[in-house]
Image (cartoon, rainbow, N blue to C red; front, side):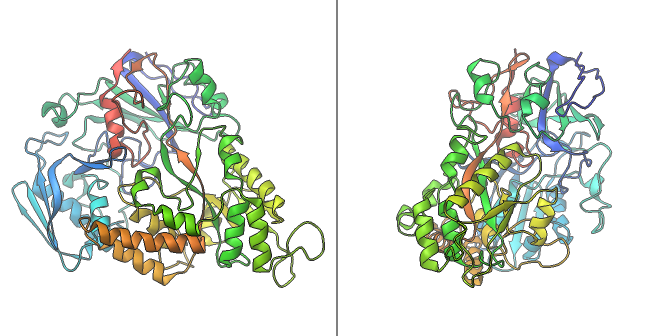
Length: 558
């Protein structure tokens, strides 16, 4: 029987009655208490989307292709028309058939202003259903990119459970036991400890031979804690085989892989797949960060190679391209623009030259440049407390900026996220934008307008408050350019890349890993670069529909 004495943070955990050899145990996604099964909240139980509630399409970021899933097809069938054709024979976990009306119900939840696809819904003229076919008619030019992204990210929830949802309860309502079409259903949940899913007797995808029937009878995800020194010290469960998959950042994983005590996607550096770009985000309304020439000099001063090559990572990450675009979007990067306009990475001499040319000088001989008006220049940099890798990067950024004469001071406390959202910062390290099916999501993150100055502030994009209406107009054009218009999309992307390279609204530092370390005492056949199992090996929210579920369906008992 599985008996988990301690969890990732050393907290006492309850003993369970789930057979260990039949249970896949994971951790590294849930930080803080589980907030139930509402897939529109930020802390829903791990597995709610993917194990229980599924999406119409899925997306494979490693092959850059969509996977027909609940829908046997879902695509634009006219200038203002999108058609979903559902697969027959799919049933909810209560035995009811999945119907076109169910899909229409889910789309129509966008009528609530609290729904994240409300703006898209406002552009819908009609939703019509004929059997398993659902046709969406748009009022005007569709937001092609956003709608396509929604289709593989919007989980289908059972209408019977969500019929009473309202504007006020949209992100807080939670069914006691969620009904889904996925391979698992709820077994138990302790909001402070774990959630356990149990395999259903019949899963439509296995029955239709679209995917293997998963071998783990149970999937248990543990609530994590704060690892502020070394995650293998505070998360020993992986080493002692009480944890099968850890999606935490694990410094020192290289040694364990070399000893055969753990596996990662790559057998050597960088060990993990890239998941997103990590940035040094400047608060652009603050002087001198409002000066693109100063931002460029700061970007050149930062020793990104030291951050990725030594620091806390020691080869676990790679330096980001000056555009920050992930490798999956490499085909969209205009290398000639990067060569002509890109800042020189980790080049103190270039930083000093740019500072001098822009009028920043060391007036009093203390080794630091002053503002152009002669006033003291001392910028504060913040990172989340306890994130050891970012704290190490922060120290390197401070020291490398010092070499160029730029005075940075570490700001301590636990308010980094709220400071970021409210604009009460000078510099923060940030990585909110993750891998997706289209670089539009990335440019939306950089240039999104309007800037929200009140209430919760900026909560999902443009934390640097960079104001450029021209760039935002180009981002909106990109959203409304059909995917088939490759030349038109490339032209818009090039224009955005040029703005980014010349204005440096955000400073890309490194590509953060899709952290995943596993052991094979109980389960084998993990995703790896040396096999044909090229799947995202993570339980993170949003990644289960990006082939994370394929990781689980291809596992085999040891």
